[in-house]
Length: 319
Image 1: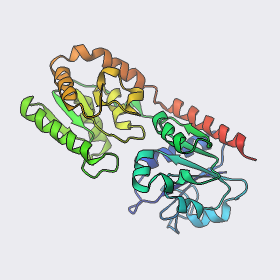
Image 2: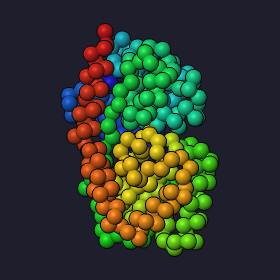
Image 3: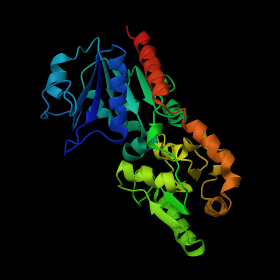
Image 4: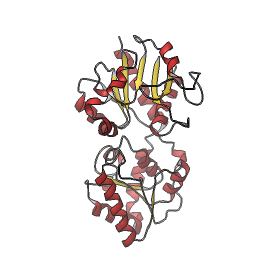
């Protein structure tokens, strides 16, 4: 059996962001006939919580059920990249870390206190090759696997484009981005608003439907995150025929067209490119089409294939 540990949100809301990806993994394994369960809670892995059924629609099994059910010598426990000492308190010999953003984890906890620093891990899973390379530097002896995320392409698509530019809602103090990156984004948009007069919307704390609507209308998304696991928002923009401009660093450099990438700190280059995309959109058509083709590769079939391949590789190494 496989157990995926996640944190329980205070309002018991449906899974979002990284937690939604864990639910997708669980569904893929169960559809393939694997006994896989979500263990949902908070604290070390999950303290006692209100859920009483292992397949409850609102979020999986309580820790009490997990502790009664897990077979420490046989079952696999998949945990997020939280603190090392929390990992040690979870029963089981076969532990796998699923880290969806190694930069955030390392920044919050330090590389020596993350779960992937523990001895005896069966594997570490990441969602981009750039993230995987960072982990391999610190754990060269441990198998590090890359699994693909998916985006529902039917939810995104272009309508009549406007002189609208979006950003990924950078805020000072956000764990994904150093302060200088957040300030750079604000300076860039202050300049653009004064000089170019285009509309600007930061995509922060918005419902998914509103984000999809804005992406469908926008000419460009300025995506200045320095520390992403994968950057699903950028891929959603690519599916919407919205140009994405970013710094030349992984994982964005893994999937964005070269013309849309800029050296870190090149705000003038990004501002000029945005202006050119607004004034001469046809000249950017090759990048739009190439980006959309790349984004279509982040689909359910690719995610299912990568998750099952990772599962098979881990299972083969079990005693």
